Image (cartoon, rainbow, N blue to C red):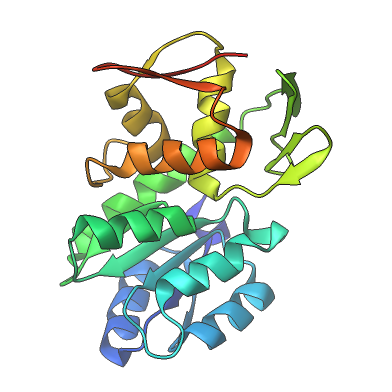
Length: 228
């Protein structure tokens, strides 16, 4: 995927951040649009249809986490890459952002090399996941449609956040296999993403709440597996 074919939307209430990030991305050949608040960001995302969205977490009125939640509810943005800009490093903030459907974080103050490295790493992962796979799989009463990014249980649709879906999709790819925590981190969040230690546990808990607690087994001290 050539850079000139990739569209990136940057949403931040600080004009100097918008100009700085936009300048560095355009210099690499990306198509860039900017918005200075959350509501404008959502509206522009629907017009611009970006491949990747960079969201500031701390914005007045509608913050980045809420913008992410709003976009993930739209089928057009189920698989769009979303990166958060944040000056905060608490586990709670990271977990809230990831639960909303975020893919990565970039810490402020922003360093151009880190910004471009993270974005290129995410785009490489996106290219790898675009390999043709079986669209739908049915296991133990669950029907998982990878194209729709939806899960159905006994005919009832279950809404999952993006990372919850990716985690479930990973576990059902090899039923009975124990996926270690390191393996899950690597496959779902990538080696370049720094997240809190509780992130996997929170996503597993959310999955169990939504699909039922009989499918995902904890293998103490190792990781998790899917059984049906």
